[in-house]
Length: 590
Image (cartoon, helix red, strand yellow):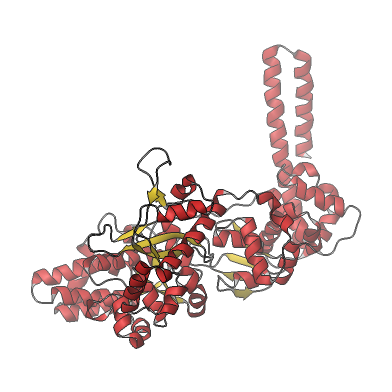
């Protein structure tokens, strides 16, 4: 048994997918919301019998290796290593012989790991670093937390970091590509350190590998306050959530996550006992971030700063999250402090602060009353106009009616007046509540399966019936893409009595097996429980349909040849082709 087969044997597809997606058993399969695109009705199907998970909405999925590649954004070799480690399967070096020498991505990950260790050593071992360590302790962080998140210190030097990395064997070109060094020239001959004299926060990917850094200024006149790694082949801000690898298990367990704004906020919150906490990495929250979180949680708790920028960030997050069907809550940190300061002064109150967070609509409504008051026409109109966009996004009619009653009561107006105001007000042109069905977040289009794909799927699932009709299902009915699957099926079962469709799948070569399993799964979902009589009728109908299509194609080809023969004056060829065409048409009417 190969390592790949051993991993599949030890790690059932439903067990792996269940770590990312909440699954519900439906017959012999399991279903859940697709982790690869936004949806409200589950279309992601896991088939333990076939060993695959697949979404027929966005056409993504496959076996345990394909799923891991899609889910974690890694290549096959990385997926193999990850799953081998999880299952305790020992890999032979021959699996990776073709991967040598190391590619750009591997070198990028290696240099980031190397420099992360360098920054850590400078924090704990250098005289300058000890002062920075004292600063972190004064901010309330424990040594355990500092080590867990691998916080470091970059020397206040133009070349200390790149000199160290060059001695470790990394080229100047690699250091510039990795965003660790910079140059003012068109060449990389003269480079200098990007991060100098800064508190360094390693940024991890979903697998816990260092892929970038956030560097915080330590001097008052140091600009910018936060300096982040640039986009590289392994670091894309819109795809990375700081702390995600630390929070994954707790998010899956609780179904909720706290979103904070900064590195210190996150570490302090985590230290206080809220393990399911993430932060956007050097950018505002994006649709991709929300899509990454969706397989793990249904509730987002926003813990942004209480200043205007923080409020705008919370509002934007709410608008973006609407189409993902999240429950959005807001934790207003008391005294206008950020989560890090609050965690330092009230470590025992952090968990309850987030657990008691109200729904965003409640928070936003209360804040409008607090900011504008309820006296005077201008204040009342302002409250209604600013609440309108959120009101339009509320999905529950009961919740809408409740807010109408509260507005009427708090503003001393009649409910009919509130309704009139809302009816006459227009949303801003850019607002997501204007869009039909919510935000346009990159809709997916379900693949429409062809007659030949349906026929082949039925043949795989019902091999006995396919055997009976075998003479009526020639290879010519299938396109070049599907012929290899048909030929394997036909060659292996020629003249044999086949009862088990899964035996058909298991005998196919690996290269064809996954495609065949997807067809088998689709047919199973499309037709459900179907009798053999119904299968035979459907197969005959599909064969007739395919034959008509073939006839139409061949007729068009011959007609084109006849026209060409007439133009060339080839009378004999023209007559021969016309006879062939007549025979074809006669065949088609029989």
